[in-house]
Length: 314
Image 1 (cartoon, rainbow, N blue to C red):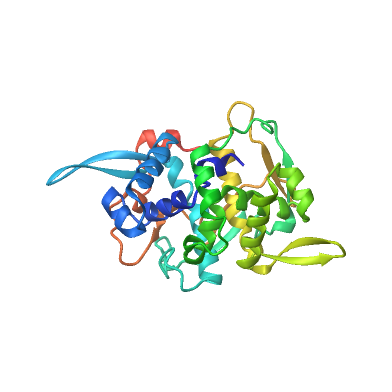
Image 2: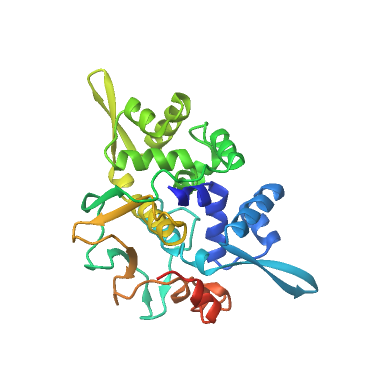
């Protein structure tokens, strides 16, 4: 998935989380995430290069820069919201996002519902078929630096990041992400996954071990081989992966078109979006309030400039 090449790193996911919580300055990010300064500089530079964040000069006793979400970055809100929904259900002690959000359009506590925009029904994994698009086979290679660091960080099944942020540790790790996606698509045994993903045995073994340890998968012995099946906890990961695919199709498709097309059983190409369970409005980042945060940032208002509207897809 092309989107994984852009946000397939645990630190990148955590920085995006902070951006939607209206944390914009380098020092604040450094202090909140306990991230090495050099690592933070590299991730912010990558997000800026990919036009997800932009640097905004501000004056606060001295000239500083803030990192603000672009329209392309704001459109990742469904993905971040999917992570929040998962943590609310399965990891209530997590510090990933606030315990409560409010939908300002109806004034009710936010209860997101992941729905098909064509038929308005809830999106379930079993109701979605993924087919190859015209852009299949044209995916760029992932950044080597980020991939190597993730391989090292997640070779240990109980790494600190995985224990503290289980969702980010999977979505933000390219190989864990791709292994789970392959199993979602029906490839369930070790050697079939290895062949499909062209992944080394030791990396695949470490990712499967981590996904089982986090109770995303369960190992089901079938004679001499083991098949890996998705648990209910793993089923709830599906909106994270499908929202990333949908975001990549909107922003990263290129001239050849998207590499993957999701078809809903209503007969339409799936364009999944979170809607408010109370008022059924599509949930936008600027329409959600996190209690205790300011409302003056880019996230707290609808994009209004002509430039922002021109950049937003469809």
